Image (tube, rainbow, N blue to C red; front, side):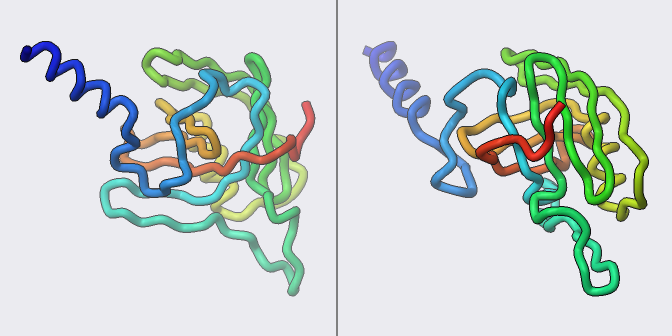
Length: 160
């Protein structure tokens, strides 16, 4: 009887989205980053609950780049992305059993990027693990105390 109760309790917990900050987020529908594109929505500090949008610098009343300036697109083993004034590309490796993530690559230096753009690139290359949902991607760094929060986009802002 105890085994049946425990099995029922685990089943209920498995299908309950406990602790999500946004109720329209569901667990990942696919176990793959490949073929997905993302736009950075926020820098999140887990310990103190701070959430802030990435900076979009104002250069003489004009913003550089499209609204989705900080982007990343994944294919089978490579990624490409954009910052305010530059692009980045490289490789990535994931373990879907542990959600570990490693990334490496380079950034083109065509123009001057604001501090958040440099931070964005350094965080991607220091990533330790991720959480993938149907419409959000969280890439964690700093021993899991902070993460980049991405929103899924319909297509790539950047092509490889």
